[in-house]
Image (cartoon, rainbow, N blue to C red; front, side, top):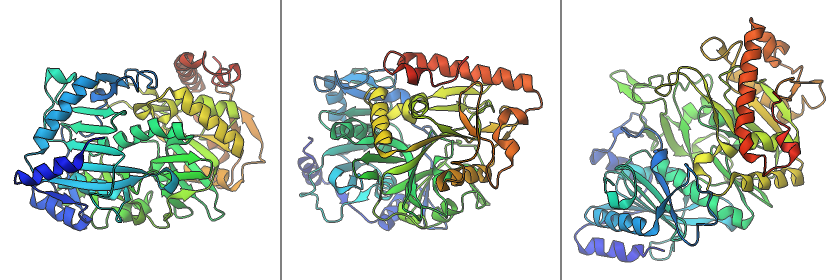
Length: 525
């Protein structure tokens, strides 16, 4: 582990200072006075992270050494860098940070005290210290001498990593040394790199403790029933878990152990493009409170424009989870009774809700399907199927099969029901049909949570093999069978077959690692 105390002592001797565990109001003021952010009327701040308005996925590396060479699932996502190359970058980051004032924040991750991990963040900018203060769990009883971090994060967003000896491809680098327990982030202002690097670390260490790390939101009902919502960006994970009828445990990352579910974080990092009081009243209320950090929301003379995509579609808001009404203060819940996989299907062919068999649950978990949309990325002119195993491929460190096996064991032990929910399109594909309304999706999820569709009649989708309820209170029955909503049934059949083939082609890589029953539980072409 890095000797941060010696590093910080040297900083003071050289005439610089570090600010330790400042309160959020002080960090807001300092970020504005230092020219990092703009103050908002609410008392929060606005940060522009351009040119990086999302994660730099191609610039993320894991250190390959004797400890990790066998454990890590090396791939295009988990790219390797040699320990010597990491050491050179780390040395230069230390030199860079040692000649400026810094912010040091000590926090915990994992709300379950038996699983807690101590993390020390050494940061170049006050706005990112605010992000860390909002997002992670407080360690108010610790001092810089007694905290004894188990993971160190060095954050130098204004440094350029353009050095061929580092083994990276650009001036941006996100490197994780799992053996030394150090994260280095260079050349990007986007705050999401901080939280996702910590999540990647937890995806490595927690399975060794028999804890399943999950990229999901979680909430709890009045009967103390816990529900999980898995989904990639834009599928509704944050929106659908934030509801007045249930209390929020967390909006993004959780663990599941023998006692139940627990949040990794102490805050929310919500996507806020097109946010509205009608659809997301709880989130709208939260982001109008003091000390929040908004990222890349367009601002004009008329104020904030949450509908604008001028800077990016990936606009974000960071705020403490206690800003949400009815949050679960402990950050913990019991074992889930229901798990929802959210897929924004731009082909318009998946049913709005389907009940999954145990084999289908693992199939769709490993598939992790959603759609990229035309116009979102350069070169995409038609909806594009995206498969992200465990709904978390960019953050997985081990083989996805490991996490799937853990999920299968936990679900069978606790008798959990799996559901596939289409939060995307119906009546046609993207550009022709319409998006399924949030109110319809909420009604379907509520019916699943309350057991109101447990005993109704189900039909089996002939292409995807999904079990679809044919009726649900408060929902028009015609909406439950997507083919019936298409004017051109032949076009529906073409799109359904096309998506089914994509599922089948994607899943071939798992066929030697899962049972035949799981392999055959997907679409049949």
